[in-house]
Picture: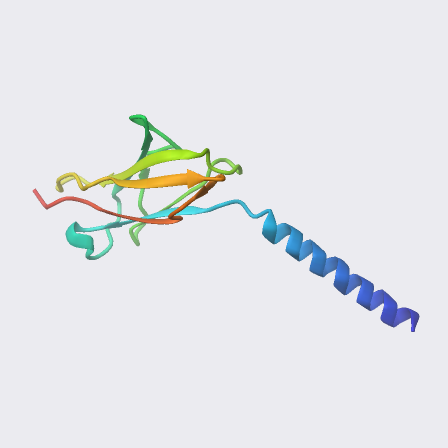
Length: 120
């Protein structure tokens, strides 16, 4: 009986810790860069995140071999505001920036897709 009580108590403790750590999870934000018209994925593109014309979150960042880059804010929530996300790559024209709003420390669009421009 005592052993059963101990097992149940441990399950409750671990369950509460899991719920607690999940609710405190920091937001994540990724940017995927596509070729013109949203086709394919672009490796080695430069991703810029700007607010009021200034680079944010250590941008520019380079996309990996799959066309993605992942953003963090040094272990903190993201500052609220409106940001412009764009991408460039040598040999391509500029793409159209995408607006991302951060509210409550979390991007409203945590998976942002941007396109580079036409090949030059």
